[in-house]
Amino acid sequence: MIGDNPYLSGALAPVPDEVLALDLPVTGTLPEELEGRWLRNGPNPLGPTDPATHHWFLGDGMVHGVRLCGGRAEWYRNRWVRGPRVAEALGEPHPAGTSFGDRDFGPNTSVGGFAGKTWAMVEAGTTPMTLTYELDTIDYDDFEGTLPAGFTAHPKFDPTTGELHGVCYAYPDLPDRVQHVVVGSEGTVSSVTDVPVDGMPMVHDMSLTETNVLIYDLPVCLDLEMAIGGSPFPFSWNPNHPARVGVLPRAGTADDVVWCEAPQAYVFHPVNAYDTGDGGVVVDVCRYDSMFDQDRRGPVGDSVPTLARWTVDSTTRRVTEKPLADGHHEFPAHDPRVATRSYRYAYTADGLTLGPTTRIDVETSASVIHDHGKGRYGAEPVVIPKDRSTTEDDVWVLVCVNDRAGGPAELVVLDGGDLASPPVARVHLPRRVPDGFHGSWIPDSSVPPT
Ligand SMILES: [Fe+2]
Image (cartoon, rainbow, N blue to C red):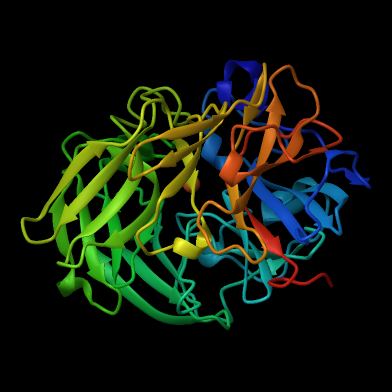
């Protein structure tokens, strides 16, 4: 029974097929300046799945997209990411290229635009895949042969240098290290720095400041008993693994990393990070008391995510923690213009199970909440600076809003400076969109139509 697994049912149940809908109905007025695509990746298992062992993170990737142009919503479409496993299940040829480690997986965690390409991405060793403008899979892309192993679903873009930075790991290929990978603006790797770690921690994300990279070595680690038992996702909470954050100078080596003792907690997603000026770093994080301890099929069953400020002191080599807001906070976002620098506003979803969208002033902890309505749940917010805006709160916020009763989803456009007010526009999608993971706004100026 598929319903025996909470990650395969209800709001997480996969959709059965791929659809295309043109000229979507819109309530309100879409800003004409929004010219590009909102894209979102997430698990959508294709074919037989064993609910007893299925892990949410291992479902076949499916990208959902909406193209906006000239005040119109031109299309919605959804497409499975064609790794070999999905291609075979669909009776199609394998994609061009091969993944690191000959994996048969299609990246299922995030999607973004960089160096004129649209990439679907995932952690743990699978090579990214490129997609067409219309979301069809092109190939595995190892950045023209320069990517040494897998990549990450959470690279950080530096708006000053135009680089992408990622902290990557590969299970089971690289059990003793993580890699700091820098990708130049032309789309090839410019540097790789190996950093040894013990216990094979699951390093989902990273942080980037103007001068440093943060490496999260936290207590979700390879579980040998699960691995030997054949678990497809052998990572679990290990209370004996000391939590620490590594401060790596951007151009540094493993010898330069300053490891700082952190709260015994897990973090999938930091918000933004910045240097303190004395070698330390401030980072705001969505943190859990434990993860993959009782619940071994997904992240929901152990603890809830709360928003906290971690101050990483590289002199005392300790991380201090301060709560930043009440409530549950996940899938954080911020104005991309303030990446790597001191900032004011974080935007979040209401935990992993979603709900209202919140803007938190990280200086004052004041919150503004947008309630999407009864039975309507907002997923990851995507923040887009308005044309000609000069202030951090002068942004559009795109949110995919799902109907828990199973009705069609909407892509809503909120005014970030007036978040509690009704949406300026609601794009009506043709059907339900499963709760997924991460996406982005890819303007046509970044990845143009082909
Ligand atoms: Fe993530």
